[in-house]
Length: 482
Ligand code: ADQ
Image (cartoon, rainbow, N blue to C red; front, side, top):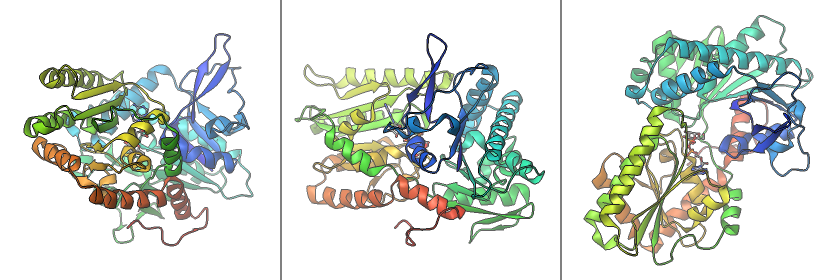
């Protein structure tokens, strides 16, 4: 297998003597994919993050490491070197400022610039060329799958297909998985390069989305924009004499790993006399954090009995700090939290604790384990792994998951309390309901949530996707979510 993703499964660092070293990077994609690439002796194509000078070499992997990204041999890593200015236009200009808001159905936030699109197209071509070189280096006696990830690389399948059709490349399958939502036709059509994106993605044999709704949106866009023949029932598109399969594969988390980390994590993270309400997010406007803290303020206004007995812990990891909109969001959140704390704090209690930094997974797991309530309230989110990580770590007295229906997770985690994150009174009422929910109801809801997430974990997700490509055999016919 060849995995193609924006980033490599580790961060490259330049040492003082000019040599490179690997630093491990966590994250769902790496956790899910790195072991498979290791075990199948596959290849990972990704952006190198720092310029690699001629003569500089990727450091050799460590076969004894327990971290799959570190085990990968040098020959399994294909870095894509991208000019710094081109990268800025591709990543910040196009991926973060056009694709991200558009695909999250927030067109007002999108900025379209022709030069950014040109850089996006150029970088996608570079990725395709590096992938083609990787294809050529693979053993021709074995079947080969190229699995491309996410919105950064929508044009790569089309380029690869063209290279294969023009000859010179062995037979292989191309698959793509989109980790964010796919918007409806009336939003998608606002993208000035909507047709090129669709045609790029249709270079695949299989296209995966988190939930059915995103797959249906994609099919509708193919029909309306490109006039293609689409079978909505069986989720197939006819394009260029081929049939492209479109399917939903809801992603899971490494459940057992999170459960284990929660068991081993530090004791008590919070004063036992307080109930912990937890928010964990990348600091991103799609995650609904401002509405969340205002909903919590409303709770303290409407239900004063929770004052001095509940604390909201908001953990936010800095994200896209080069983009002005994200800097403004941080300033607004700082102000809102300061205002609410100023309003309600007493000599021995403040309503909101706020951590703005990257945290080790072990530290996060202790919070997930000790929280009475998890507030997962994005305005829009492809899936949302935090909801699933929380459930995996809830092994003490069960808490309650509050979830936005505008997330992929909201479509399968039926036992959560669903709430519209945009309306503060409803949010406050739902937090109150969670904080006062009887133990037997909490147990019932949490055990059902845990059962589902334990079964449909990230390994199951990879397995189902690979089965659909025809590269591995299905080990479980009953692979549909309840
Ligand atoms: P993200 O938008 O990054 O992922 P999410 O699915 O919630 O959103 O994953 C966030 C990850 O970051 C979680 O694994 C979480 O543990 C971690 N994290 C959050 N705060 C952290 C902190 N302070 N320190 C360290 N780690 C932190 C995209 C899509 C999602 C989709 C995933 C996977 O936007 O919708 O679920 O990909 O497909």
